[in-house]
Each structure stands twice: as C-alpha cells, then as structure tokens.
Amino acid sequence: MQPTRFGNVMAATSFLIWGLLPLYYQYLPSPNMEELLALRIIGSVPFGLLVLWAMERKMPNFTEILADKRSLFFSGVAGILMCVSWYAFTWAITNGQVLEASLGFFITPIMVVALGVFILKDKLTHGQTAAVVLAIIGIGYQIYHYGEVPYVALTMAIFFTFYGLCKKQVAFSPLTTLWLESLILTPVALAFMFYKSATTGSVAFSADPITLLLYLGAAPVTLAPLVFYSIAVKHTTLSMVGLMQYIEPSLQFLLAVLLFAEPFDEIKAVGFGFIWLGLAITTAEALAKRGPKQQGPKAPLPGA
Image (cartoon, rainbow, N blue to C red):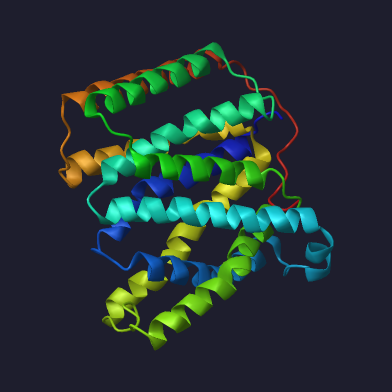
C-alpha cells in the first residue's frame, strides 16, 4: 500500500489529540478505572452513531454486518484489545505516571513497524530503520539501568499494536468498525454498571454533576482520535502510522516534565535522547526526499 496525504493527516491528527489527553484526565484524580472504562464503552455507542451519520450519511447495515462474520469477529477482538490498552493508559496518566504512558507509546511504533514489515510486507527506508534501532537502544538503556520491566508501558504497546493489525482485517468502513467495537462490548459494560450500582454503589453516579460529566466525557474525547486513527490505517501503511505515532508520546513527555513536574533523571534523558535522535533522522530524510509535487489519484473518502 502506498501512503496517501489523507491517511497521513488522519494519523497525525489522532496522535495529536491522544498526546493532549493527560490534560483532560488531570481533572479526574484517582477515578474508578472499571467504571470509567464501562461508561466510555457505553457512551461510545450513541456518540459513534452520531459520527457515522455526520460523516457517512447513513446508519449501519446490520444485514451486511452479520453476513461478514470474519470482519465482525475481528471487530470484537479489536474492541477488547483497545480496552486493555486504554485501561493501562488511563491508569498511568491518572496515577502520576505520564512519563510511563509516554514510554508506552514510544515502544508502540517499534512493534507496529515490526508487524508492518514482517507480516504486511511494508518497506522501510534507511532513516526509518535507524529510528527503530535507536528507539530500541534508548528503551533498552532505561530498562537496563532501572532494573525493572515497564509493565504498564509494555501492556499499552502490545495491545495497541495488535489493535491496529486487527483493524486491517476488517472489511467494514472505519467508522462502522469503530462503532461495532463498542456495541459488541456494551452488554458487558451495562451488566457491570448494574452490578456495581446494586452492590457496592457506583462511584461515578454518586459523584457531583461535574465529575459525572467528566466520566461520561471519556467517550467522545477518546473516540475522536480513534475515528481519525481508524481512517488512517485504511489509507496509509502500518509502518507510516507507527512512525507518526511519535507525535503522541512526545507531547505526553513534554506535559509530564514541564507541566506535571514528574522526575526526569539522567537515565531517562539518555534513553529519550536516542529516541529523539531517531525521530530527527526520519524527519531529515523525509525533507530531503521531497521533490516537485506530483498529481496522483485522490485518496478515497472515509467509508468509500
């Protein structure tokens, strides 16, 4: 697959929003993570329908959806994978571990690129190869000196990487797939909320109105970048998506150090330095290869 400008813009937009998400969750100190996940799934169903109608001007065709059992299966698997990655991510950024979240999404592009090369046969340039190698060195340096495996970061990275791979196996439009991911998991989320309310009581529903709105707002603020990401993986290569994902952890890194004042020692400086060097190499390579723009076929619209 040849990357298109449309696909690249969608990927960049999704990672820009994700990178700024820690700002939203700072207003939810120590939230109940299970309720936050359940309400995010439930709220994504109506919000997803609104997005579908606004962008595709049609509602999901259940006859076509049920007829394609393979795509339906991979939509469900993708939803589960995203839930695990999202849970780890929100736990990190609501527990003063934004740097850990940043590291998780610095690891992710390495895994995404590896999958793109070895499974989908994407091609890497010399600069992209150097970026991957330098990122591995930087992360390995931190693991060696700290003497511990960053489990939260690895959980985020592994599950989000396979989420992207599952999206490649689905024949539905990107927005329909995204809506299905939430719809399939909604019965489980509703059952959990009913059980929680009937037993120990719901933290979200017993909170003040502003806190409740923040819980419910988790759906649109996380679904928006997923919409752009879902479109991106359909219109550009998995390797390109993986390398552009450095936008997200870079923003989270800056927020953690400059705004949230998380500790940033010499070990982290060296580790992140290798990663930033790789990013600089790929950027320089891309700029050097830019030539006269050629008129090519236009990228299809979402769902086309």
